[in-house]
Picture 1 (cartoon, rainbow, N blue to C red):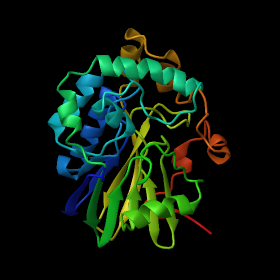
Picture 2 (cartoon, rainbow, N blue to C red):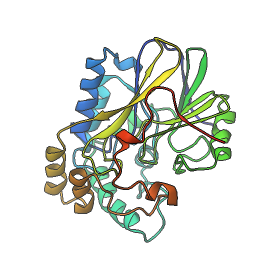
Picture 3 (cartoon, one colour):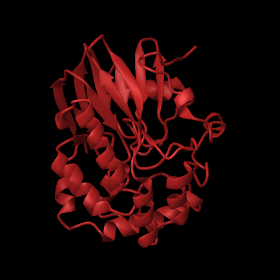
Picture 4 (spheres, rainbow, N blue to C red):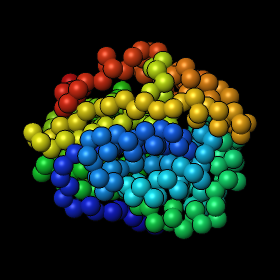
Length: 286
């Protein structure tokens, strides 16, 4: 079956990009406040997928997102829910801690979403494309070819180039891996805004999003999302969701690093405010 791609044509003004809401209503509300603060309309806000996930308010989060009017593509979780599957499709290693935890939170999310959810999920595209400051920008979840592929900053550029080529893009906005980063190679960009529903394994309770700005050419900046993590944690605890993930909301440290390459494992507990580069001074491949 061919991919469904939504073309937003030419976009102008600031844009707010984020991923992995993960049923974290408080984080979504904080992102909506950021949009208001920066005078960014919902039409210029895009989620890289996984609106539903680890946290305790799946239906409330989905309703809030729908009512807001922002754009989103399908994450692997949305695809699995849409198709009435019994697992999250996250591509965790069978038998791993993440795989075991996913059985719990996915079952909770599936049981606590209205039956009308499927109709909405069927409206979401696999990818979004748009023109911005003369660049072709494309939004993917994991990668173009594999929705649940983990693409990190340390991932070989050839893996990234495959999505750029497939979508004839100059810029890819991606999600899924849970870590924000920017990678520039021969004039092409792979940008991951980060996820807003879980910390980035950096020892901080804030999460991450990204703003694109066309006021002086093509510029981007990662921004921290500060939200009421204590309330989000309580909702996880009340619903008997994995306490290891609830603790992550408080400590900013992941329960495990099973999915991470060696380079990203070394970043655990390091403040990303010192690592993420402001504006468009991205990491450049050699």
